[in-house]
Image 1 (cartoon, rainbow over the protein chains, first blue to last red):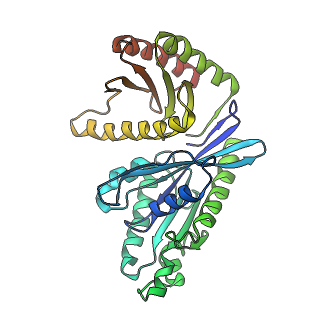
Image 2: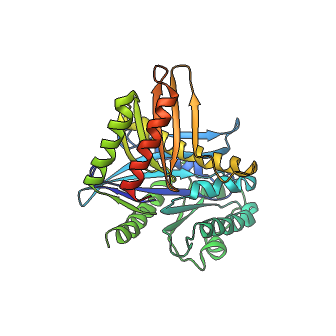
Image 3: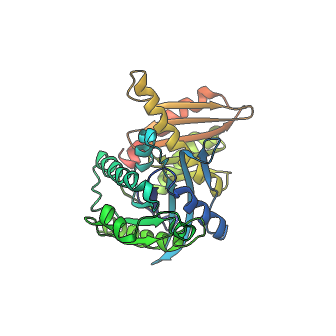
Length: 202
Length: 129
């Protein structure tokens, strides 16, 4: 839920990083947390299992400056990617204003990306949100693995699989190295704020 | 559901929280929506603790609603976490909002429950929940 708080002169929006298991959603948010000034980010909350897999969600509030005198606070969330956590993903999407879909460039994950996008579409539908209208950005993560000789999908293949109908911006990334992380955040923030401002200041 | 919180509404909400809860011993009171957005908070805790508390509380309520369904309930409308020194009382306001009260062991749970119910009624009126 987007909220304009006129007393604090602040706009709050919720952005969710979605995608299949191990595609790098948490890695994106952790990179932001580690590299951004601590006056800009708040405390990061992670609820994961004993390994490094997200059990419930990650949460990071980020202040991204001011627009027309209103401070912008983004609440970043990730979902657990594993198929069995469907109910949790739906819960985290509640009140979402913008989505980053983190797709895995590994060739072996091709079908999982497609299934996760379908899952996102259905979960958004359960909140009466159309994936074609919500602010959305793709991130094609793990591009660095090509150098290690690991078979990865071409950007054209990923565009064809995921973005042929939606035609939203897509960024090549290597979240573990920080490449493409800020570009993705900048674009989804811009799009989300534009849509929210149009909705709220009608 | 998007929302614009005016200065006037914010003031009214803070008045309710102060008179009903802080004046009766609560340490901090937070009003959030079910997506985890912070609407209003009053008390001693810094914002950097309140933001994750708001997000986790909304998620906690969402998870509890799923548990409720498993036992044939639609929802649980209040939750209580008891600690050694601090306690947390969560109550649902309408469909969209959650009131969270932090209080210590010197304050009785019964009083917080009573005052939370009263505050919730007034908050519903203000927000039209």
